[in-house]
Length: 204
Image (cartoon, rainbow, N blue to C red; front, top):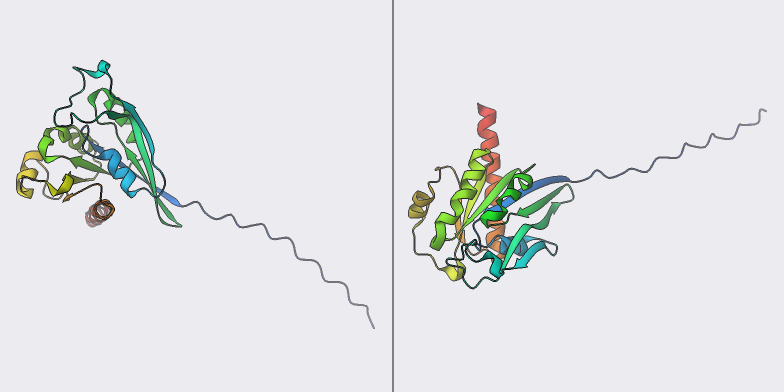
């Protein structure tokens, strides 16, 4: 009777490296003091990275503090936050500096952005024109958040749209950026807007 040969040991299995989650970049823009830093902090799952510095006498005559005269800090580079939607998708939030002397940062921050959120204050709607023009000129989809602290708003949605000269298809939401639910609604509105645009492009 033949002696059976010992079984050949199985080759070691290489460990499976989990795939990195897909990353989505969203830019949050708007004028000085409209609530960009606040929104990032409200919705981020981690302590947001902030680059705020105190306003000094050097900014007198340079920085426009109309309507935000009590503000004593300003973002000089960016705000950064993160939201993990699921193990396969992570959203990164980049808040832009609002003052004109720091606008040169926008060109770097916008690289790779899938969409944007423009925050506007009804008391100073003109401070949001540059952000809207910035996204439109680069064909980056965006939604508009009308930030109403304590629900204070003296204009109707139609009046705001007309003042901002928004295209009819651009979503606009009114709320308080300090409320997490409003931040969530903004992000969902942007996702829906991106999907609608993608669907329309596919049809064409």
